[in-house]
Amino acid sequence: MMDAVRSFLNSTGLIGDGPALAERLHRDGYLFLRGLLPRAAVLEVRLRLLENAAAGGWLDPERPLEDGIANPAAACKDPEERYMQVFRGLWADEALHRLRTHPHVLALFDGIFGEPALAHPMFVQRNIFPQSESFDFTTGEHQDKVHIGGATSHAMWVPLGDCPREKGALAVAAGSHRAGVLDTKVGGGAGGMDICVPIPGEWVSGSFEAGDVLIFSDTTVHRALPNRSTELRQSFDARYQPASQPVAEPNMLPYSGCGTWEEVYAGWSSDDQKYYWKALSPNVVPFDRSYYERRDRMAFAMAESGDATARDTLLRIAQRDPDAEKRERAEELLRHLAGQREGAESLSASA
Image 1 (cartoon, rainbow, N blue to C red):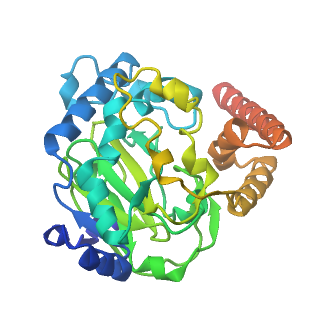
Image 2 (image 1 turned 135 degrees about the horizontal axis):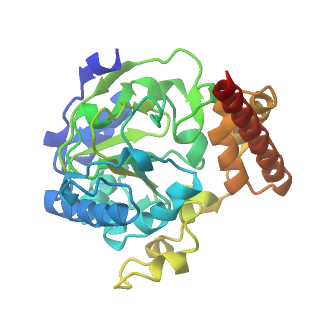
């Protein structure tokens, strides 16, 4: 059903007209823009990240690096430690960081907001292996607001390289942003919180070329299409908001598990844009963890009843939750689920 959705409305012709872009974003909850970023710059970053991915064993060594053909035997996902071992180097890439603060991007958001834009220091870089019978990390229907907090923000999703629908492009529910924050359940994709109520709006998607971007509001429901290609689908999504508005504390930190800013910057060749946000004097406020607390209670209950679909959420709690007692409980339940799986496999082998 998702592959038959309507195509994105192309808003490229409005670039340079901030009020018109803001009006369409307010109306539809998204903007699809062709060629906002220079294609050559995006492809340069793609090649840099593919080199690191290949060094980590993620790519087929028999195929050209630039093809980005995944090694199915290496399939892994955030927040598994075998994923994070490679991902830390990808996320810290200097040229990758500079793409999200490219002058074209900041000028676009300055125009939309009518004031200086703050690019959140924290952003997400995704590496999605092809979907198979044994592996699937396709992100379900969700909203960013529960993960971002603070004032209203907008995401910019950028595939690193060409990304046709079958490679796992994004889809958004146009108009869904007007419904506010919707109820969630424990999900298996990125973030671990999927919408569990009927979704308003109309699903739209499309194929991307390197340099194209998709912008959407923090309450716009969106999801990924399955990666049915043989390639590793690489992308990043960064968030932007008016610099005068409150920003939640986690958005000022490096991506979880990637160390401190000092460690991230240690490998950079230039000091330019290090700690760029300090000049904007952001109003940093506490993060509303109520949505996470609700998700975690559900995940604990699911795991205690033997439901292995809670595993990814338990991994996130064990690695990232500030509450030591919760981390310990998540680790205990992960061991319980692992023992349950081993018992089932042993029983199957002896049958």
